[in-house]
Length: 240
Image 1 (cartoon, rainbow, N blue to C red):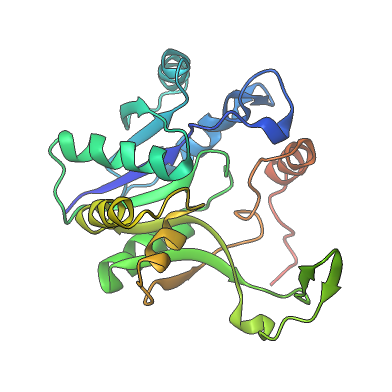
Image 2 (tube, rainbow, N blue to C red):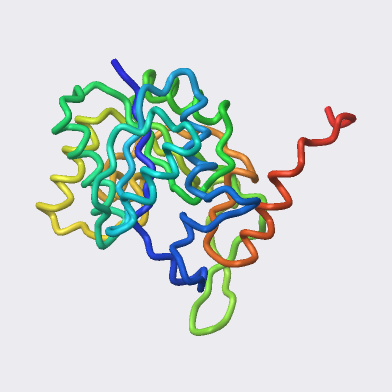
């Protein structure tokens, strides 16, 4: 059984409002996608990496990987018109390369660069034990719903609500079958693998505790400011 990371980098990043896709923006002179790749490159349990990439940027991605020593990047495939399609393209690239159905695949956002070694490890171990693993945090905020332009009551205790992050981790064969079932049932444009499986009736995806740092997905300009601040912080030595 091998372990692969599938990092999505197929989006154009309209909400970031910049001249280049957000995954290729540089922060402290390093492309965002490289920070994310390095987390999986440096994890001893990850065997190889696949990236569904925005069309036209494949050579740039490979050049960056060469420059920064990302030797585990073995497959760059074409991204899709949606996150769901990009993930499916990546899964098929793994399958066509001869990967086994029982191999483990960590699906992770290419613009979520602060994933820790511990989170990756816990995803792999949880998937081995339960077949499904979803990274997230229990909500600590007071949660309400928006209806007709006003904030309204939501009758779900916040301790039962999960703010999902990535990775989402599954066996390759399970995930390919889920995508094929989704296509057959007309389930399209799901925002994440965990929601795709949930729409298909999978209700035993096990939680892996994430972190507030890993919760940072670079989507808007202020997220880049937060990333720059967080990457320069090693934590407080006096905190238990």
